[in-house]
Image (cartoon, rainbow, N blue to C red; front, side, top):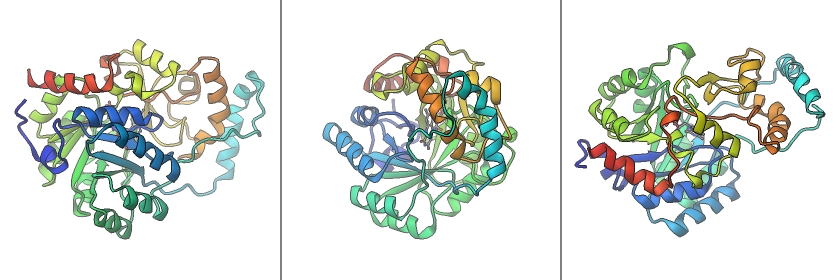
Length: 351
Ligand code: FMN
């Protein structure tokens, strides 16, 4: 396809304006396949240690030459709130009893830490083409170091105000994340969750508000979505959910089964899994506790208390307590390899 806007392609040096969404919980093989096929392969680093980031990047670079994007969270770690923690444990107590689990016995889990000096040093060492941020941006000194390492900086906006703010901080591209999107909202300025616009409304307004390329995210699963995003002024798309059924994603069987069964009305925004609003396929935890629950501790603490239940249920093949992150177009996802899917979506967009 002669892409109507080549700014992202030329900026990053990729054949297709398709960015694999960074997705916590997916494997480096997925990133490698998309990078190898001509898209921008992203690796979610928020839940990885420095060692695991190095190992994942080595795996990707062993099999693909394409540019890659390392993605980090920029959340403010939560303040202590013992009463809320206690209320949350009380809400979970019946499920612990049902599964014969001790609520006090913590199950180890990957820590979701905000981007810091140590991770910045890893970026300086690995020098990816792009570094993208969710939940705002790190401070100016860290951004300067990322730039000095030769990396482009992208970040997510869920409103025009957030896009303007990111633009004023000098980002190289804005990811316009519509309400349809799977996983966490990137929202970082004060605002109403219920007011978050959908992509069709958000995208052209962000395009009008900033001078840098805009990447559309949320509910795009095939070439029709890509063509629509370009018609609204996007220079690229960031696709997450549509890649989750690729075998290289390596997500749980329960998650794959839920995606295969998904219909358009099966997702909702919930805070019960991590404490921050994110879109997931409905499951028992969401129905019983939420989907939005005032007792869920702030991000990422809600996840810690759920971890034993999640792990136990997953061992039994159940996704009852797992975040089944998915966007509203989950039903359009397909069982294909990631390289094939990348090329197919690009071909479909050309029709
Ligand atoms: N966005 C991030 O910036 N960092 C992440 O670690 C991250 N994890 C995600 C995990 C999953 C399973 C999903 C579905 C999305 C995640 N997102 C993350 C959000 C994506 O960047 C993107 O906004 C979203 O996938 C686009 O909507 P779609 O899923 O409908 O394609």
